[in-house]
Length: 378
Image (cartoon, rainbow, N blue to C red; front, side, top):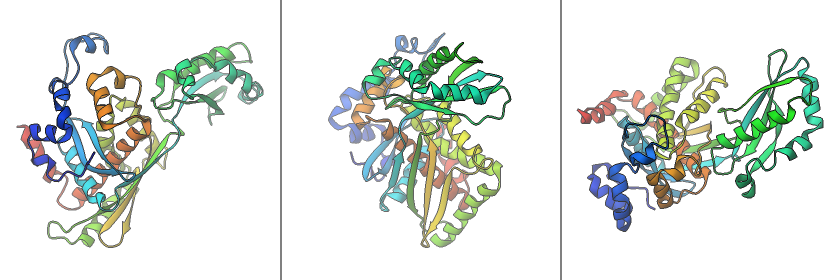
């Protein structure tokens, strides 16, 4: 589907719906107007449900990802995020758009073991590795039947006397994988209990998602604005980016802007945006005390190139993706079948929002366009 839609924001809601859905609009319209979730279904998601809380569902336009046009669904309350993402994507479109690569769909469970001799305990685990992994087979038959399942074990570096942490890696295919890895982790905890000298205490997923990185890159064109040449804006842009390299307070806010896009995509696609945020912040603060997540550099005199590398584990199956009527129908409409597609959309939205925020701070200030859109709510 074509994503480069000039003036999409100027159209009425009815015109936007007709442009996007065409002959399928009649099937989508009831879900779009109701939010797609009835009270009986809502009551199956949470405890103590008393109603349904609605947020706007929007589409970020103008995105090209790996040479394919892509509309990106976003749900959030901040008005300028979708506009900023769409404007940034437009600046990258004629440069080829975004190039994205994702690592395998690995999610990790951690098993905490209390032992007087962690080195020996780990040695015994390694000596019995094949037997332990074989005993984990069958814990998630559906995942394993599709080609997923346990990948292996590793020791987590730990400066904690008398304790060992074992990482259990699982290929979760197109799922985020929390339930699967927790099941495998708890089984491994049972398998080692009483077998080696020590006491397994707990098993739980790590939302750091090591080994599940998505990398997005794009070149954005800068245009003269507010009496400044493109080259002057480029220089100012790089100054604002470099500020975040030297100041963790600025870096944190810089990265929050990236999460504006990522979180909005995760929420729109029925994924755990809290786990996603945790992974993003872990990556930042495990990397030289809170550096900016995206790396920027000059290209010529009127362009900048951004590269964003993040641990992302959005799932295209499981959880709300199958349960929520609007999400599942929207996935089919947009042909979202693989987790890689969702991770790519989230990473690109994050990079696009980072570009727009830095440019706005450098040129007219962050409030100029934000407040214009914010005041529409009054």
